[in-house]
Amino acid sequence: MIRLVIATRNAHKIEEIRTILGSTFEYLTLLDLSGAPEAVEDAPTFEGNAAKKAATLARWLSSQNHADTLVLADDSGLEVDALNGAPGVHSARFAALDDPAFAPGKNSPDCANNDKLLRLLAKVPEAKRGARFRCALALIAVPTSPTSVDKLAATARFFSGACEGRIAFAPSGSGGFGYDPLFIPVGHERSFAELGEDVKNRMSHRGNALEQLRKYLATT
Image (cartoon, rainbow, N blue to C red; front, side, top):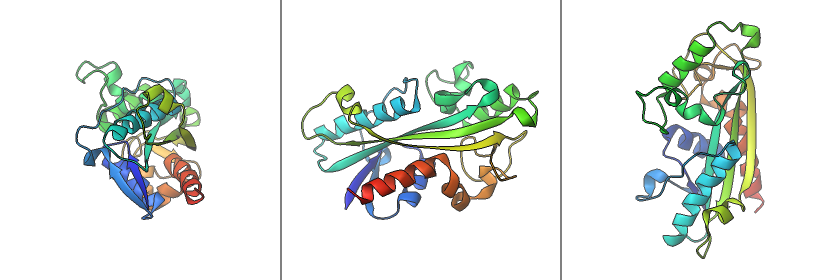
């Protein structure tokens, strides 16, 4: 059985990943690894941040004797056309970027991020509220000897996905997380938070990327 270490403490992401990939893997997450380092997510792209997170954890796991282990890191976010692609790589800390009430460089609450997005789009008509979720997954094997983070990041295998949609005028639904209550995927009139996990996982940005990963792992 392949041991897969998921480089996140986000319980929602962990559940999505385990649900989509299935029970054929032995899973660990940052919640299981006391002392695991956190990477600074300062790359300008989703792929860059995902690779940095995976490489940082893989390097640390090498020193903890975790041989025959793969590290999976996700970086994903929302791109809004009317905001020239923002919040993009800053999606999780969107509200914290310009509000001193939040710790600099740290994630801000989902409700604060959603409120800021709605304020910025308050005068934008429905026809111009196009947006998409993007996801980049980076998969890196834990090395058997000391290796730099940069060299490990260069070995990353990427899997990406996107989901087109639009931003609603108000949140709806109690499921999901992040911007799910505001995001209405193409072909639907309800938000991700209303559609439920089964529907979301079949069409979401992360679901698309994870399906590519699942097929890759099945052949290795």
